[in-house]
Image 1: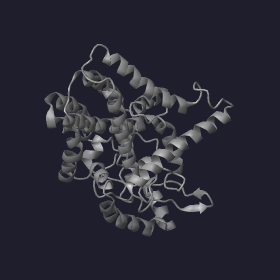
Image 2: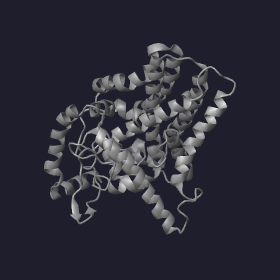
Image 3: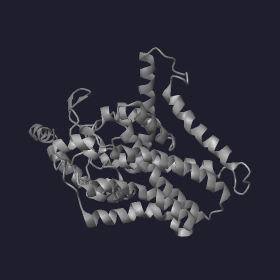
Image 4: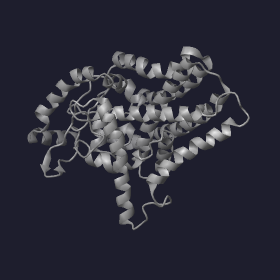
Length: 372
């Protein structure tokens, strides 16, 4: 990995800086972080282009042990916590216009939705400290069940009808949103219930049932912050921060689900026996290799490699030409997903091209060998 690309991951610190600077500048400047992500980053993506290079085996071993990459993702957790503490403090003490509330909300959501990606990376690590930080970040967007469902549900059932986070061909994003938000929560409950039954633990004991804890902690977090930060202010209604917190949570996890919609649109694994599907390989997720947005998203867009080899840390994820390729990076694709006719017009031909070869056994064998 070049030193330029390594340092490029530091670009993730730009968004929180823009949120704070935009707030104090006021007015339309409060939209700065949102516009940076959804306008400026796509422009850079198109100007700078794609990144098809992969690390050698020796480089993978070296980069995997480099603590620089861990420091960035762990620091993002505390920056997100600090931002929410700051917002809880300034909102009751500052009279904002409707425009400024909207700008701050969209900008904060842009960062906290990326925080779910950080939680995703940490949740895949096999150590208690990383998993604690994963849950902490998910608590700050009211989506803690993702910790259970993503690892034990989505990664098992991806690209099958059993996965609520896999979108179907010709399914609009609003229809998918209902499917995945409701279905993923139900799936996480079933997984947790099965765990408790196996361990002969009581289902409704909040000390044992993680799903009950995942309901409690966000409510406790926002309640404590609201009480602590509103004492003695009397300037703005006490409910402003709770409303803001839940609104940014809704928008953040909706942004996550837009990413799921994009990553798995129409992809299906072959059913090799009733209820049994072929093993996940790099053909089973949409991929995007735009350099700048990948740096901002910790290479989440190299999603094909992540699903085929989930234990790989983000800095070592690989690009495969054989994977189905998105035409743009995630920021553009998210906006496109909000306009179903445009989405279907752009993505259905690409999906049909994938389907024409994805179920050919010889092609699959060649892909698996080439990407192992």
